[in-house]
Length: 333
Image (cartoon, rainbow, N blue to C red):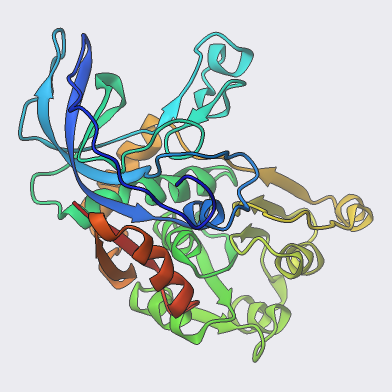
């Protein structure tokens, strides 16, 4: 993407893996909401030009010297973070919030290439019976795994997920998988129907059933004490702060293209906790694979459209055209 809204294809020399590296043949690339922000020039941490692609599945083409446990032909995905390993967060094990973090597809070249080289320690094996689409869903599912872990033990708790896009859907599914009683809200009847298809029974259009009314109907007088803002709007974060039970936790999952205002007087008065979440670590990826393989996370209802690699820009055009009646669009290589 050379500038917002413009994608160029270029022929380049085929890469080869070095020591400790793996050459991947890319199979599927998922287009996510952050990619759409880049397409519109609204991503707060991405410049141009940038090779996109960070949620994907691939087959191992070749391994470099010193690589163990990975073989040509394996179905895999890989973590997209490039970290320094020496800053404070890295030294304490929080590599996903490295002070010098670069993410492939945003601050470093992504996988929108026929062949891509990555370090072997970033490669995550996939079950042989995974579809390429399931493999590409591991990354956004790992986002949901990590985000839901930020709220602590969810078993038996009442949870509201605001926003039923791909990440909101997966967060709601993970809350359910972690034992929470869960509702999800959105403005799109189509996305809410997709949430129900994934097993999220309580799905509400807030224009028809406001959040407070929905929560009272599902949870009774207790309301909800955990919220995940996956919508990333002024309205969603304001509603979360206003409606959550005292002492509750709000996890801010969305990428906020704008800068919403938060009533900190209410946060203090009700002793609320606002918690950020960013990406994932390897255990989150591995849990995402297990959850999908076990059928605890449904991905097929989220599949919306496929676009050939040589017509990459059509993925964004499709998303623009369909609006809220769209979840996951794939690039096929």
